[in-house]
Image (cartoon, rainbow over all chains, first blue to last red):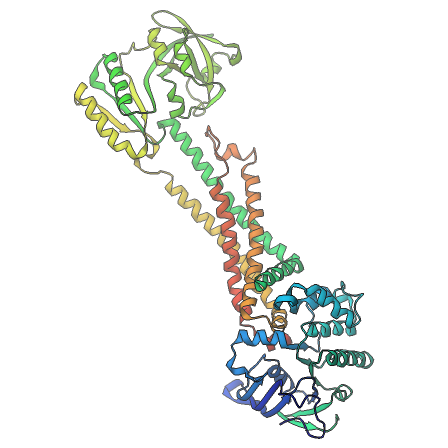
Length: 244
Length: 394
């Protein structure tokens, strides 16, 4: 299922960054019964796209996010990234591709405890090569500056507010200038006002870097910020003209 | 290159952040390594002490004892034959030896003390433990007045005179001679009998010995690898001269193989057990740590950490930590084993106190690294098998 014609994505003239064709994800549960978490997913994500995916708990949102993030493989169907069939890539190749091209933002921030904001943002750069590796402190500092935490770099996560922690997580996700940002309930642990500020920042930074942004959320206010909207229901992805 | 540097940075970062846990784990490893190193070092040093005691009793490996009972009272012929043997086979250390009794005038009257008439090499060959004064030198042979070295029991019997005052002892024989005590030897055991050592050349000159008519024996310190061959050759040479009643045999402690092999085995067993306990403790802590860090590992995987990088990182942490602990443990062991109160206990009877064995130190550090690698292996395998999706939600 491609992006709805009524809401054209910004980069549809370009080849898709991520493409899913008839993707199914099945898990085997107790007594060998199969559970179809995702069914026949068709989706193209182009550079600079802004997508939201809403759905109830258990609808398969996180499973879809894991597939998009190359953390999981489809049971059936085709998943390609930059035109490459992801199934043909080994685990390490997928890890390297993920590290260089995809940035994750989690609901619970998932900052590494015991490390300062700066160290957290530097962590992904430890898996980079060349300039990104050697200039990691400079790059991380610049990204923290960009998210407005230039004066909080040496603080530990435990000393930061929820909004600040999520801004650190955004800086960490974007520090390797990924082509795809996957945000899993990015405002789920924040109050409405802080969530709005964080989403505004995320939209801005994604737009600046030209990254595609996929947001999975329960929150209609967050979903409405995207240019393209989807609803996931019982493992089936459907386009929506506007957020609920 | 960047992957290796990155992994090392990660490892140090983990050690810094989890310093309390790391310190606890390292304390266990450090104590295990210290115990292992101490046990091995103490064992080696105690063994060296026992070897030295054995060497004092029967000579170093290999010491040949040569006697010719059939030579009768023709001492000159025996001494000449022994000299020829020493010369022919280029034996570096050798000494004639006569066991006798010496008439001594003491403050309490005359006594007959055990006397050993020997040559200067005897001190090196038997590791004689001079506690005061000195051992014989070649120059002593030329001195006109006899010099003697006595054990502590003899020294006490003489009223414990100050050795620096050249105390004299009157030797009673065909003609009385005053000998000077130049050194005091430690008693071999508590309650030892008074014993004196004199140079054979001087006693011959003063006709102090030989009254019993026993011919001297020869002790020769030879390379262990040549002992059997030299035994056969010397036996043949002397039999040709003195008849069949010639005895040449190894008299050192190692003549029947290393008697301390069993001790070494026991020490090795205890050391291995100590190390095993340390390794199990570390493995336990490492496993708990990995369980605790499942989420973090998942987050790192989401940043692009490969499974190899995760494996290497967990292993590296363990090895870096145990290496540091190993060095600390060895230092602790050196401090304990080298303590002035400990050394005399473990190497009782040793004349040359053996230094801390380098082998034990290397074994300690090497074992620590090996334990780190082994204890890191299982957690590293667990870490690699972590499912990223589940880990992030952990």
